[in-house]
Image (cartoon, rainbow, N blue to C red; front, side, top):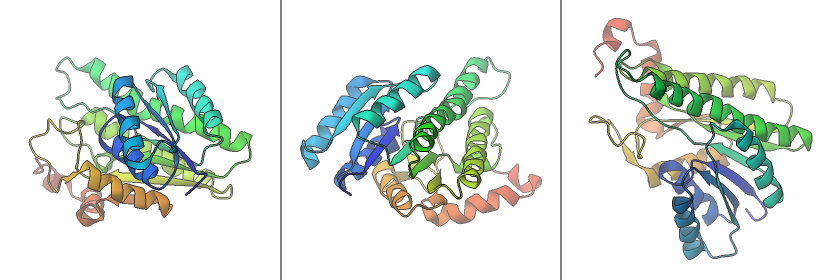
Length: 250
């Protein structure tokens, strides 16, 4: 994949970090962003140790809720990488608590990060693609949690439902532009975002999850459940499950 480039947001840990390693292993030039520079630097060092210093790795500190920075840094990375083939909008946070228990600010942060921040990253990339009449790929890391409102996770479920719908809209909008839109719907992948949860059925580690996500990206899948089994079936089932059965899910 010589000459190809990718920007990954939220690349300092979990899925983002392991996706960076997957892309680096195939020779991609990388633009990595996150809020913590020291962790990004560790990812850069690991890439160079494993795959050689010839792999270009550009680092930028970015909080995706500072929207003016999103547009500036995406443009910077596009220039630094000599073009942009793939954006992976991965940066996200979680929130788990009952409504009305003093966590409004956390809910606000979840929506601003997972929805508005993600949209800002996509919009900034689309400006580049359309401004340069360039083909490319937009990848959004959403979640099976966006299929239904799970109790105690209202803002997170709502954020992923919104991002999934946004990506679907963009996919229809760009059908004739040579721009591919991939929605990734993970089940439980072992990352810091869900490590606090007591129950994570069918969980897989983030390295394995990243490999499966990478394959879906390279194949330009429109929608990919990760892992395919069992979430391709459970994810579809949960959308149509009657309320009296859905309420029994803990």
